Image 1 (spheres, one colour):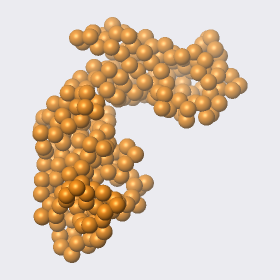
Image 2 (tube, helix red, strand yellow):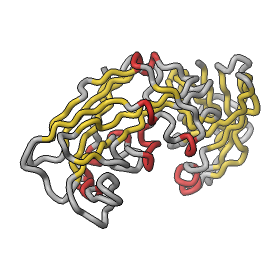
Image 3 (tube, helix red, strand yellow):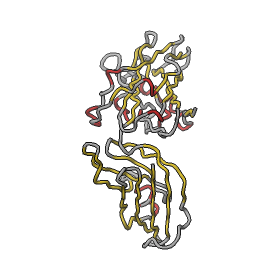
Image 4 (cartoon, helix red, strand yellow):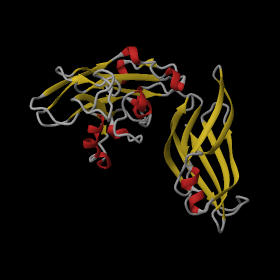
Length: 307
């Protein structure tokens, strides 16, 4: 079983969660400008989506599950956190569970019609954890079974705090929206990359070429995915398409707009020929070719993905 550990990078930020320790408009919404008491929140720190919380609607995307589809099981570690100006002099037993009524909470945000994740795709290691007197954090784990997930379907698993021994439960950071986005081409692929050191793409493979690797087509939404190119620091492609009743068409590939500056532009690399994608009729084989100029030489790049 593969267990994802909390990144050290975020360790010091657990204390910073006290910024979420305040109450606003009653007792359940956190306001950092009005510290008035203790409140229990959830944290999915390990997912690292730019937040130390990754819970609540504000950080819905932080609950995305991106484990490789070939994995038999993966263990997600998350926290119950006592936010507030001080710790308590008593233990707090916190109980978590699933709230099916929250499955479509983000429908206005991403327009994805999620289904409740069936219990065959996950297992709670425990539904209770105790925040010890004088402490702020207790850890919980949940196991997911990626290889059992139908990658064409979108699932959501809203994990909520059911009880906190009388301590106030956060109304906006008391839910982690674990979810997977269904996409007909998502999943694990065999990956080969060939680089040729000229604009025309002639001659044999040059340094940096490889074969026999694996990669994942990670859904961005139901009609687009990201997956890395093999060139240089390997920024992601953004591959989009149309889906008309299961018939896929109009495939377009480009270096992900949010990555191209940091990966290419800032390193003096210019895309000379934009990526051209070729897709097999059964949507199991994808070939992408593009040409860059690195400031001194051309690089003709080919990525091959096969399911």
